[in-house]
Image 1 (cartoon, rainbow, N blue to C red):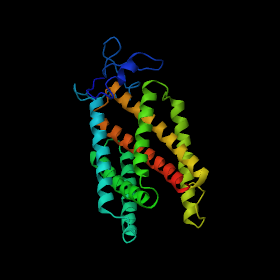
Image 2 (cartoon, helix red, strand yellow):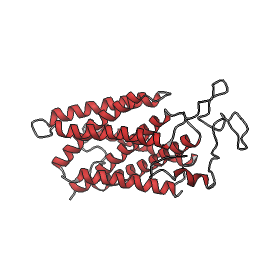
Image 3 (cartoon, rainbow, N blue to C red):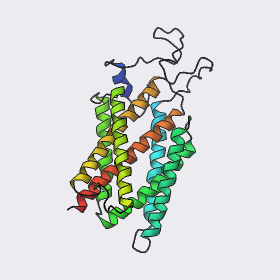
Length: 284
């Protein structure tokens, strides 16, 4: 795996060193000894037997992933800053701004579902999701900064970077190993987490006050920490997906899927870090 990015330049080297479940790195369509083979059964990105091999240079690289991810995250940040500046959250405009933010969040959720069920990535859908998600994050962050704690947003951003850097380090050092068991456990935990969120929303909507109590106190802090840990686990799975895509010679369009997954996960982590910091500042 070749990349000019200093962060990822040696990512593949650790995998090639051969720890336990490392994959053999070879071009799609060749065996370990160099003889042609149909590796569709072991390589999820290999062309099928009735599909022509991909042209040389059409496989995804780490640089492709970095550029697409930077573009997607940059779109989130840009629209978040613009919405912070252009959608005021003072008493006269809070209702309108928050309504726009919730509408943007709903449309972003729909776009993310559409992309998730598509067989191929759509840059327009991914960037559309990023732009609308940024609108929601900008208004939400501005509201919390205005009415709860002025510095909490900067702390949440720094916390998100810290979690991402920690997971990247742990993944590169093989302290985190993304196996089928790991993936199954994370999927089960995330399902339970989301069901609790839905139950909390339903209880809140039908007159149960603060719902299940996930918005304040020790239970809220615990729920937020669990959310951060789940986000970290998803980030490790995203790193594994990127590594496998580059290792197996996935088509270049897979870089957009990687960017989409990384953006979803980083937004999740930011929201959970923001939840923890908001509760902590509210209770003090």
